[in-house]
Length: 76
Image 1 (spheres, rainbow, N blue to C red):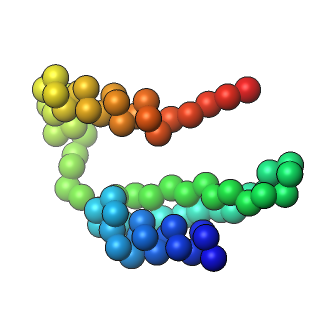
Image 2 (image 1 turned 30 degrees about the horizontal axis):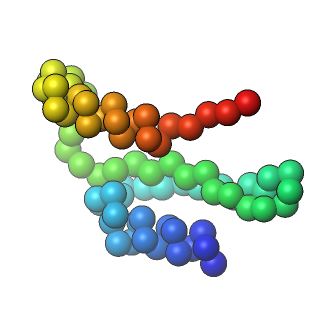
C-alpha cells in the first residue's frame, strides 16, 4: 500500500514533472522490512548541451549540487 501511494504521488500526480517511463523493484532488508528502488525517466526536452550551458550559471550550479548532495546517500 505504501509503495502504491508513493508511485501514485510521484508518477500519476507528476510531483517531479511528467514521467516518460519508470521501473522499480521492492527488496527486503535483513530485518524483513521492505524498501523501494525506482528509476524514473523524466519527459522533458532538456538536452545535454542545454545542461552543459546551464551549469555555467552559478545559481543553477549551486542549486543542482545542493539537490544532489541531499538525495545521494551512502554508508558502509
